[in-house]
Length: 550
Image (spheres, rainbow, N blue to C red):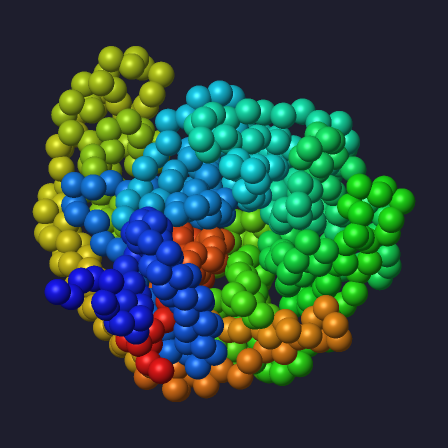
């Protein structure tokens, strides 16, 4: 009698490819040695298929939906995120009003469920733009920024040099104080090499002044101390909002960044670490990477996180429109200190509303009785708008005011006809104003329709597209190459709905897919978008059918 053990390897692998790559596949590994070997082959095939799908642009976008009674994580951007085991952890971030958080959430990558972790210990301060990495079943959180409260007024934003460690198994935060700590820093990057956390760049505060930096600091997580290594020159320009990629235990890649207002970088630098990281006299070497095929560079790279997939680096961005000088333009976002810019979308009221308001104020003044103004001396018995009550009040004021004690008619003989004529004139003026308002509203609607047609015509260029940087020769030949992007072909091979262009989201690598979360919309191509912070989780993977293609 046939049993499950008689299933051919191809069919068993086909079935296991349909299983979730997290808890379910882990359970399948424990069945027997044969299943364990097949599961290992499925994992490798997922990685290979995903990399191939990214190269040809045939990818699938998927965002899990939640029932109306389920409240997922709140909307946020500039948060910290990393993957540990089968979960993605998200800390902090801020809202569209720059309100910062200090909550910690866990997203089950297999079940697609959010859980807010009610932790113990010493909580970090509410902040954004912090770095968070995994090490030894812990999350290591450093630095960050927060916006001050509204009161008292004229407070400055705050940078942090706090170092917290979250014990995943014990569900507890611990604040650590190690000597040699860097200055308060935000917008930096960090990676872990063995038991060493390497921090580069960011916005730092020295003696009341803030500026971006290109300093390198190291945290020895075993010996519990900070130190600043010796580095070679030339060095990258000071920057924040860049991406730091760990190539191996001895090499780090730095991509793009922002040095301040209108100082955007799209260069690439390689930092080579010494073999003995504990040797304080050993020098760390910087080397700028030569970029090939730069015309395929993403249109936006600063504050646009990059992620390593195989021998390539993936950047999600719109199709490049500025081939001569790629890298994008300064975003109209809030960023701390010297890189802040004023948002351009300020609402301006229609021009006719103030005029109409002034006309109604004029009508009110014309119709209101003048009760307290005395007439000129030479017009003692001339016509007046005062009523009898005004005349009695004038008698009570005493003889010092001429003409106040004389009886006067309550209204002028022809006041009624004059008022009717004025009202008719004002009514005609109001009709003309309303007609002008309708005309201007029609012109605005036509302009909106023209803009919508224009935006629809450039929508394909405004879609998010994976851009791949080949780093196979970065260490050996100090060269990197952007893969060509055939945008028309990619549009026809996309499955699902790509998210709108955004910045300050998180991008992490799962098991055979990328996970994108949060962010604030930003279209570098000039498209119109409402600045609404996102709390959507988007999976970028190869189409499910591609796993079964030979």
